[in-house]
Image 1 (cartoon, one colour):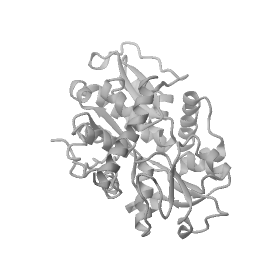
Image 2 (image 1 turned 45 degrees about the horizontal axis):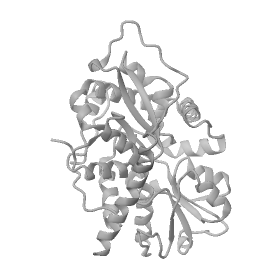
Image 3 (image 1 turned 30 degrees about the horizontal axis):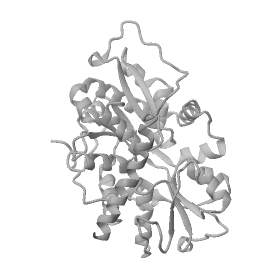
Length: 367
């Protein structure tokens, strides 16, 4: 068996493991919301739906969903149709929930969206909007690593084999001219796949020398004495790259376009409010994080993490295609057929109605 085939088979098995584990105990946890919005008198259900099931992660890079939940933007847009939230820890579990109908719409990173789309031969989801850019950093122990060249020979954590940050780090390593076996993580740099929840403890124990991770994990490490060595945004044109998209099941999009449009309208309104009220939005996002996880972030973690994330309606489609090619280059993905992964029709309709500028699907739109 060729090495690349063995690698891809191993990658498929590893990425499936979270699905098997989470399927036994449910796909995601119910989000708690103490700011439940009263349904306006006379409000009607959209498309006759009792609820729209919305998924997101308990990460600051999912700020649109966190704030939209906490401040009631989605519920207001849906009228008498309930906004029903589920919180996920991993992309594969959210994709499985979307496939099974446990959620209808979700906020998710680019790699699981690409994997979900390609594994279903383009039949399960569409990306219908953007949400966030940035919020990913290489943070290191300053006693062991003082410059980028010092990363060679060190142990650097990423969240999961083949996840968005793992692919980005493997690509950066290759650009330095260093060699790493993507499957094992062994080579000129030791890539240690570690869940974001335990990465700070791994850093404190000295078992890793740094990490290429999203917020707020990066700022949690900084609070433990790490230093930011590289902000991933500096590697991208205009310092922008997709970190969070909005996806929907194709069946739900076809059957309930009015509900999808309502959620997108709420997303655009939420993003506008976040950008106009950054301090209030930061507090709202943190409050929802506390409700979802049981613990809010301290200021020394929250403030720098929030500053590094850009909230946007633009899905930054060209950067998603680039990220997919990085995964191919690393040997983690067959050359994907991404034609049709986007349907930005409803988003551009909402943006036009709000006096905004339309966004591009970079030639990857549905016909």
